[in-house]
Image 1: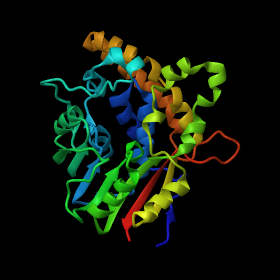
Image 2: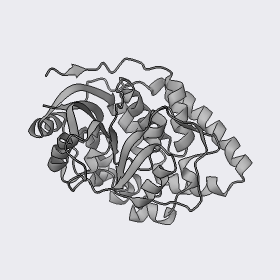
Image 3: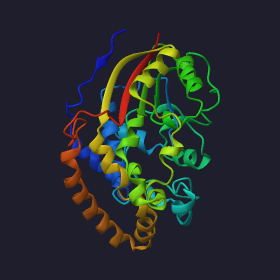
Length: 321
């Protein structure tokens, strides 16, 4: 089967609207909102035909926004976090926390839902459940075989495969649960990411500095590899590449490398201590400014490097052979 290279310089409709919806939810981590918005743009031409599954869906917010859902301007993911004192040194996940009675303020629901969503963390699944965007949610570790029948799904989506240790089994499982003629939409980071961080300057910056900036990110991505190795993994699992869409360049990755990550717990604590009216005024101004700064970069081909470099993330569309 021939591979379609989707041109990365094709602009999708209304990038400003997409970026603002992600910034509304992730305003205190704008580098994450920016990355997610570019990922959503790459997925735009790939319909999630049912039966569908969202593997490692987390709290569901990314897929909900991508599908056209929206929240009130008063809502964001930082209103329901925990472990803030352990984020810097213990690398805790502030989002692995759910509060009783907390409900997202949804202003627009997507026209469609995922049939199934999976994640390892119960708190994330609890938050995903509140979106009413998944018909069924399943707690599952994707290092293990999946609890689904053969040929169960027409569309399989995952943007977290590089977190999986047992990656070859995971690839075989993707093929097993996907119907003949079905599609697997897999967004994966490449190990070129290592070159787009400041880790190579350890001798000047010191390990402590890098620990504060990085918080063990790359070490928690055991399946990072080159584009060629990803292709070999797909081939070994019996998967053909239908299309390949690079959408994060070296410049995007360099911007993301530091972002506001080191001070995010402090920003969250400060923002959540404000009176609601003041918090919303600051958030609104913050999003307006960041939208203006990030929109010129919101293009899958934007790269300031003079030479061609490997992308940092690629969307592969796969099908069982």
